[in-house]
Length: 177
Image (cartoon, rainbow, N blue to C red; front, side, top):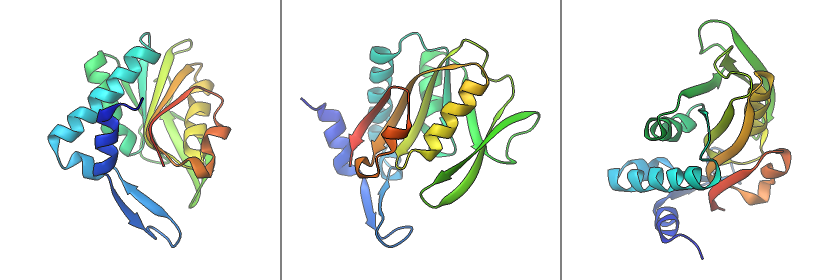
């Protein structure tokens, strides 16, 4: 049986056809952030998933940029470090990087070297799983650092794009579209 909180949240997400290009239905997760009560429910649901699926997580990794919005409150509530993965050139110091293909072209992700320690159990958080290129590259960065991805946690998954097939780690998506 579906969690009634998730159903209520999904019904509040605005959808924009043909954005950012024709044929794409854009799910605007920001519509949940406009109402603090909805945002709090979303964080509570994500927290429930983490406590049930990976209670022994060591660090939370959030993907640029919407993964930051959900990963940081989770990290605070769990009292765990938060580590950002960003697009090329946006992090200071020594970084590890990986290039990837996503639905709108190619990109490069970076993570500060030594931010994930060897053997740490890592939760990766993002808003959306589409073709899987972004999430796969984040998993590769964590692996390169010696971390172990124990869960990829997503708010929305666009199942028709089959992005989950590219991910070799457990994935949990709150909403399927």
